[in-house]
Image (cartoon, rainbow, N blue to C red; front, side, top):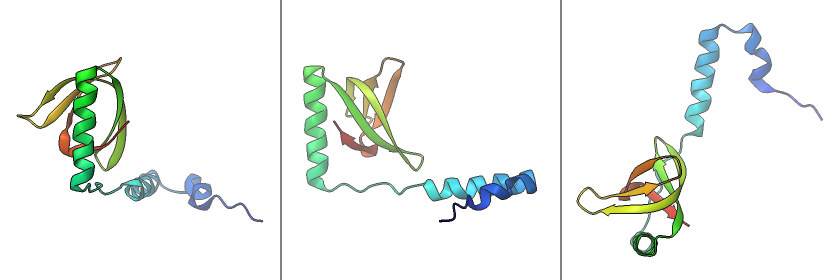
Length: 106
C-alpha cells in the first residue's frame, strides 16, 4: 500500500506565502460550528452548575470559543446572573465563561 504524505512533501518547493495559505486552509477545515443545545440540556447544565457551586466541587467545563471546543478544570467561584457568566478558578488562573458558551459539564 502506498503511504503518500499529500502536500506536505511539496512544501520545501513552495514559496513561504503558499505554505502559509495552505496552513490557513487547513485551520479553516478544523473550525466547528457552535453546538445548539435544547431546553432540557440547558436545564441540566444549569442544575449541574448550581450543584457544583453550592457543594464547591471541582468540575470540567467544555465551552465554545473561537470556533473550537475548549475545556477547563477548576472550581466555580461565582455565578453572575447579571452578566450571564460563570467564574471558574483553575490552578493557574480565573476564567470567565458566558453561560451561552457552555456545552458540557462533568
